[in-house]
Length: 278
Image (cartoon, rainbow, N blue to C red; front, side):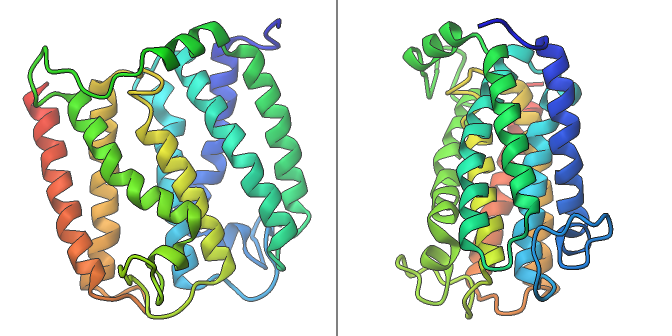
């Protein structure tokens, strides 16, 4: 299939398109996409977003912005990025469709999002070298010790297994996995979540799984991914610090204290990997 645009043109567009939404999610999802959206892009009617919805939206924005910045800030190969982007786009479409038909406060703006996502995915598909992508699937490698154990590749792919637990939990449903009646006994919240919070939690899970699979699945430079992961870890540590010490999230439990300590350790290891392999 003939590419409709060049790899660079696609990468430039997708960075701007998703970056536009992600920056707004990071700043204030309610202000930009809530019932009285400043830019008239109200994806949800009803009451304003609560703090939990805002937190999940902010986490989605942070993860999405990290992905959007890969080709420009960290000079990631454009073909590899296009392949990662295709995987992400395919996973986001069902999320938007589900939200439109199942969240009572969802507005027709989701129709716009679905149509745009379908068009972008089609253009994305024409840009991707499918033979190269299939070859990558055949040569997946989680760990490599020929250059030592304390390498960016081994670190990043090990963190995948830790992060994937939470990302899959968010996709399944934040309340089911981390709510008052957590099926795992990991109660992060004393009350049930707004369905809009569940939506942004699922978005965070999809974005996070795609992000953390970038090296072993798409063979994106692990050294560069380790650097951006350090930035991500610092940001997520700051979010959890606010929850634990400034009590900014009503209904949060002491489970956040444990998670904050683990996150702090992951951030320290991340920094050590980047410095050691500089």
